Image (tube, rainbow, N blue to C red):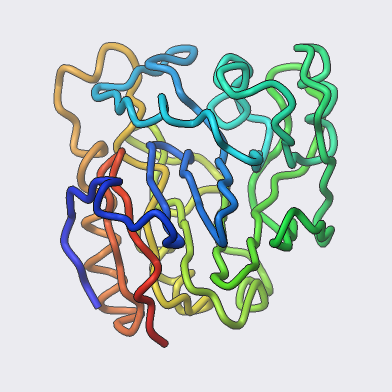
Length: 269
């Protein structure tokens, strides 16, 4: 089922509702059973050679984040200055190897995760899932794997991180309420280990979530290209929605602009 782009605002979401707010790139704020989890926080206007043509200020209300999920160590997913904006002591679930990067920056509250690991966190269970993506920290390491995360409470949410299709994707979860699924990247083309809109729609046929929010689009642009209004900033989620309507018409596609929120309280199976 296709839902057009919507300008949801956080004040449209009830205080006690399970919800997701898309902050841009791979950064989302997921709230399940009152626990607030932040994925791959990138909270700055610029990182390396990439800049945000638009910059959501929603990240200013992150003082009560309970934990962070880091999918891999690439600079646009493990961003030290962004993590330093969060309250000291915020637990960070991250793949093996990331603890070296974080501790060098004085961040010691790291929960090391390997594929298949499952950890209780407050009322939730957090499981590290496979990802088909290079997880190393360029250019000199450390080495590490890329992960996704399955968040299980009264609502079940899958955060894919960065990935392409992989074997056994259909076994991630049999009862997914929401998938946060990457559909592009930050430039006019994609390297290995990424989902494009067509392959992301194919992923839906394996995951079979009730709802999906496309992520990893519309946020970062190489410096020098942002003034050209490139289509890769706007078209991937729309193309994904069309492909999803063709390949997985039973999945409810919700496209959120950066800063937009979606309540999961009225989900139906």
